[in-house]
Amino acid sequence: MELTGYIGALFIGISLGLIGGGGSILTVPVLVYLFGVAPVAATSYSLFVVGATSLIGALNNWRRRLVDFNTAFLFGITSIITVFITRKIIIPHIPENIPMGNTTLHFSVLTMVFFAVLMLLASVSMIRSTDMKTEPGTPAAAFAKLILYGMGIGLVTGFLGAGGGFVLIPALVLLLRLPMKKAIGTSLLIIALNSLAGFLGDKGHFEMDRTLLLSVTGLAIAGVFVGGWIGKVVNGNKLKKGFGWFVLLMGIYIIIREIWLR
Image 1 (cartoon, one colour):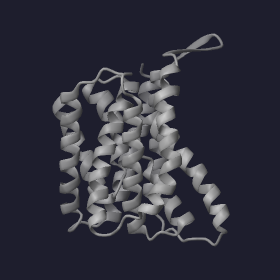
Image 2 (cartoon, rainbow, N blue to C red; image 1 turned 180 degrees about the vertical axis):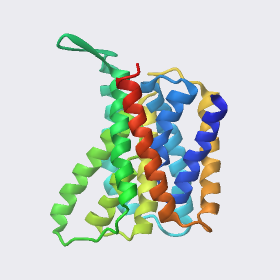
Image 3 (spheres, rainbow, N blue to C red; image 1 turned 30 degrees about the vertical axis):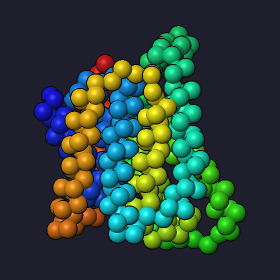
Image 4 (cartoon, helix red, strand yellow; image 1 turned 90 degrees about the vertical axis):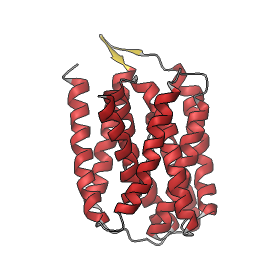
């Protein structure tokens, strides 16, 4: 299973290099089902893996002048604060067993179910892959929406250890009218900052296998460069839709496994 897990780690980076995102949605399932990491701890591992790989992707885009630092700063402040508070204060105080009437809900199971729902939403976004057109609006309205989006991205990243690029990129295009390529590069920087802030918020909360963490991260980063090379000769839109269907099936599998096959 570990060999399959390392292949999955490489695939995470390849998808990021190919389509500018999406790979982070697989990080938690790979860690939980292939490496046997506990779900809540896996979200912490994922924050580091996603943060490091997204930072490499952001640097590659910065070299091509496809990162808007002002936007990253404005959007990032809200989401970074939300992520840090979520990981530092909220997560440690959530009990593993949550009483719910005559039954008990396990937080680890809820984590995986919510993650599967996130995968379903992300898969629909990738499969549809429609062109986004900017809409007119006042700067004040866009700024207010930006704050709400920032908090939403922060909660997704904080609770589930996923980047949330499938929500972030449309927000940058529709609200701030960034060109798509610049929106992708900017989103990678925001995701990197959010994820690494969340990982710092976890300091002292989990015991981590550093060898595993660095191995998975290293393979994911290598995958970014492999994906970038493949992307020069393969149609990215078709790959994105195919990856979307794969994520959809994975999300359905996780729901079935966690609810009916436990």
